[in-house]
Length: 291
Image 1 (tube, rainbow, N blue to C red):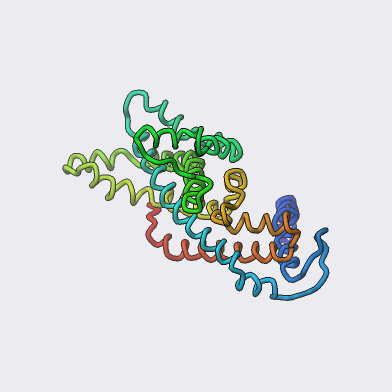
Image 2 (cartoon, rainbow, N blue to C red):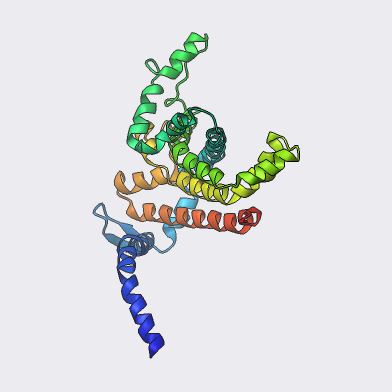
């Protein structure tokens, strides 16, 4: 009876959390799975039960296959670049030099910029005639680039914007991890004659591996869920060059009113992110040093 009483008290304390998770997480997930098995009308009402037909149709769809390919390329462009740049800036900002606090603020400033504001800034910079980037190219005698109008450059342009917007968060996490490393280890290494790169790869990177693992995992998940900058910069174009799977879900649901197909895409995205995350924890976490 005592154990049941303690269990009941625990459930009372957990009830608000379960209620919030149920309303905003579990119910939408169950509803999405339900919609993925039906054809719906423009009002979102289920009409015909089709089972797995929506999933089979997606697998045979050239548009969906293109969305998956572009999503993989986008992740490949943004995750390694964003993590490397943030780590590089954090290593610089961790040095004890006069005025470094100013640069720490600058490096982390993108954290305070919303997706809409950041995308609008880059939208102006990518402008074919008024943009800063093309004007710089013309100064050096190079041809202008259709950053957002060329199928070859549109995905790269969106990736640049995404990396820029994510650097602030990653930088702060990396800097916090670096500042938690004991300085005694570096002093001992200096006494032994270890150079900068020896200290970096023998002390800094191993002890920073938990932080690095966290940043890579979060950045990877966020890259699969990128939407705002794509919607503002390219709208999925040109010729579906930036039609990532999240944006494809948006168009299927709110432009074409095909909620069943959109829900099926959402389930596929969820399963893929879950699979990638599990692989990361199974493989990547083995190289993480928690001591």
